[in-house]
Length: 324
Image 1 (tube, rainbow, N blue to C red):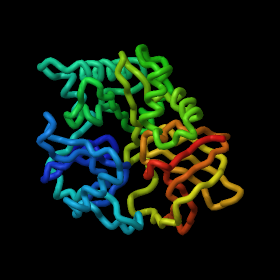
Image 2 (cartoon, rainbow, N blue to C red):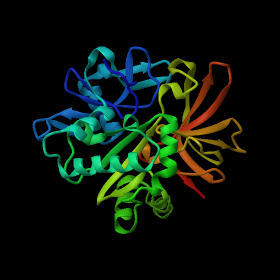
Image 3 (spheres, one colour):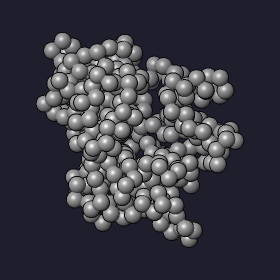
């Protein structure tokens, strides 16, 4: 029986052999909100092919497995999801890291670095082995020599404690030089007009960089018990895809995936928040920054009757969030 809640960082394999990545922390009772990540193929040693673009993932499901496209009344649109009865296997990040630490076989170079980095984090920050795991290609089994180390830390207290001490960890380096330039081009290639400011932002982030030559990203994820709301407590209504200028007035949730920034706007007084389900927008802007944001605008109706506007960034390649 699964002892940990299945949240961001977990993957699930379906009965057809599709691999989905779990998104977010709250889910409906009978399914997981999850994005397609890998599809079966005979052309790779792992038997899986990665699907990168979000639009490509949806097109694949429309053509081949439309049952994984679910009309969510909460979201007010079709979302990718996996019904519980279609899950064949659950891939648990914490369990997988524990297996690698106890593995009798010789680990790959990347696995060795990932285990060593986890050891450094546990030793030099106030987290425990039950708080940390490996996700991404290392969890799914598709990692190659040049793959990233994708880590995840669970629980609000553990996440904040780790974040406050990560700069003290030996061997953990921020992006710089030509590697930074390559990283920015890979992550933000569609936003060449903002290359300089995005490079400055990326260089300062603590949750990504290099460990013994391997690139890493650490995803910080709350437990469901850390949240004051459940899946059905809010209703989202699409208002439009738009651009707004606003001021960040709160960034305490900027380190998490999903991340959130509290904002205020003189031109749109009901705009209160910018959110993203993509790790690339964590640590991105800070309280006091005047920012320009482009994304999906939603009206959020709370169970209490309160309503406000939020902008979701990261669903389109042309979305952006930049200070000015």
